[in-house]
Image 1 (cartoon, one colour):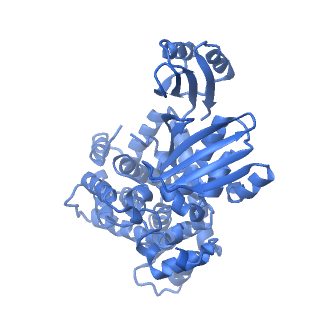
Image 2: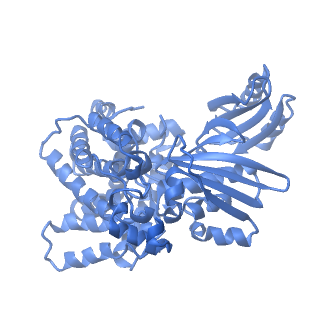
Image 3: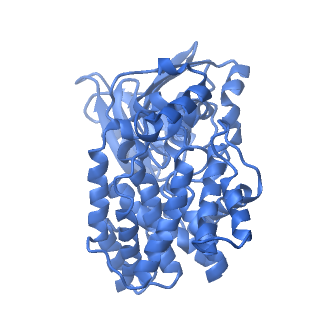
Length: 220
Length: 295
């Protein structure tokens, strides 16, 4: 089931005018920000489908940048997000893409600074609910509604067991889990939605596994 | 966990409880939160709805484009004149639904029910019925859980996205949700709530999403008005004992299939329908400062 909570239906509290094109866009931007982990210096945003056709009218542009500034859906600063981003020295560019995507409300967000960048593809599936469908070229499905761990690791036996053991030791329950890879035996990505927020101790322990390259956590 | 309306009604009837209770219990189960946490969260949503309605019917709300605003307030003044033909309760619901959507169009704060573009129907009907049925705060919160339960089924079995399923998925869903919640608030049975949802949604089937200039304004605000009135009529019909010949779950499924066969021009792309009328195009050109011949 795509929708699990009644508050996906009655909610979110948000700045208008569109739950999919404004609130959903803000959430996509905000997940990208959390994945990047710090304020970026640039943001390259591509809109597809209905997003590309109507983003100005729906405030999709200000909302997604608001999300990148770490604003929630009801933060009234969203209205001025483009100006605020400029003041904070974030270089924002937007393009309307013609390519046909699986979902009509799709956005690709690349944010970064001189030390690195991330590329996130998000879809807004209705009522403000979103899914992240791609991260740095990996296919995945992440709702952003639960705390989650994203673990980049070597595609090798024992990776999942090693991670699961650490989570079990700290009594962290896994709600949903997906593993994907670009190519057999190369880099792989584990996406784990968990019931509790994971603290630094757990992150450090996961990072110390030889098979793990990088751990990113997303808070509730 | 209920997967469709039939299961939802079955659960409420076998437990001899309200649909709202089934939704609250499921939410507690899924999130691990207490009843108090879940209901207080909904209370907060109710407060946001109340504030949006009040703002829309008392302030001169205008959207950035200038296309919408002030109609909810205008209708309140008309009700006061005592000349209304369709009845004060009906027009009050319509006015409050429009007021919410006008606040939304002006980038004000609202609560999506189930979406922002259709955010007027559920609160509009609730705050109009408040005057007649005098519900407690708790019953008003339950109203939102009941509406949410039906919306939950639609979202999981069909769609609540205009880009995916047209306006029938947004205002249509909201109308069905409100119709069911009205029945429960008025003391009807769970199966009467399902009949109201079916009757309301049937009359929204095929409704396209064709916003002028891609803005959630024209015709969205007035579609919320019609959604609110449709919901009240459907609820009255169900309370009178009228049943839908097509069961609620099959109506939801029909809505989904109609949405899938709708051309993209009529699914929130501003390429067809009212958006593509000469006046629609003219307004679009004016708002975005683009010469008409380049569209």
